[in-house]
Length: 388
Image (cartoon, rainbow, N blue to C red; front, top):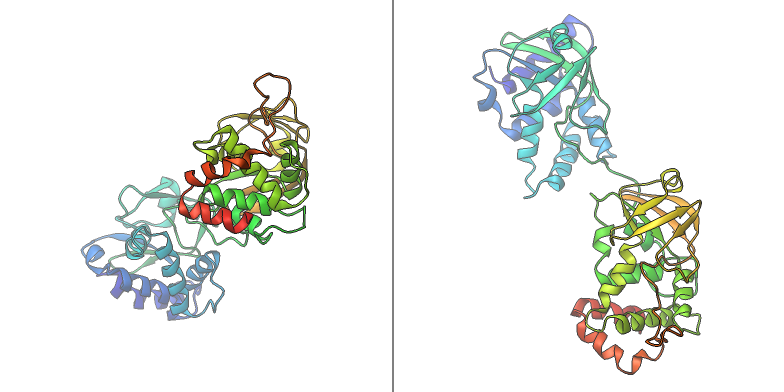
């Protein structure tokens, strides 16, 4: 008997045996999934098996965890939402292999009762190498984020095997839930992204990330990052340290670009990238972790010292930044607002005589040409859009 032909008989048996389920439609989504995955040939030859069968409500719960906000009693809509989520996870946009893995994960190639599974603990499945654990009627699967399943109707004899009805879909992999939070890049994009007169938003940081191509890193949904984000006022103050005498964001950004060109005429973007990646620490670290640390690693490779709410950078001549706002949650990490730029080196550098800092405000006499020559077309267009 195949699993597909088995399902029309399951609900009446459970209803008769325990009264747990009320209608024969409680496995409609599971039936749709089995049809889509064409699993009848795979399991039809089994002489004995145990199926951990999720109810329609279990599939609806999974769909809602993945962002579905439709009718949870619409089996087709629920299955469609799950299939769409699996399509996004699949490398080739084909959800069937992942769907098949999930379904095979619900079948064990031996017939057993719940007490036996509780005693054994670990349960093998038809998905090669994948197991789950059963403890006191709770099934612990491979996804640590979603609620574990409980067996709500046990030991239903269906002739060729046994069915254990579960109230959650079992997942062999860590499936990302739909998050209401934007990515770290999304947090910054809420500023609008164009230079303005608001010193408290993040237009200059966003522009720098876009010009260097680092925006993709902080938009990666699979990343787990801690970013220390300076507002525009911090960038303007940094530019003034470099010799800028104005107050507007465009002029300040151009001054920073000119300084990068002076420091590295061949690859000025690498200077900007070093500064930006010095603001990023691997892993998601909330304020309690950050403030309780002595040293933080960065993606730039250098370290940041921590002294209370003060972050101690590598420039001994500059005022160290202070954390002024904490725990801006993102789907791929957390951001903390700081009131100054973190400097991975002594910026600006001293002049050759060692008696003062290099003034980079005159770098536009030749530096701009070198800078634009070193940019790719896309980066150059971004810079023209945001600076000119």
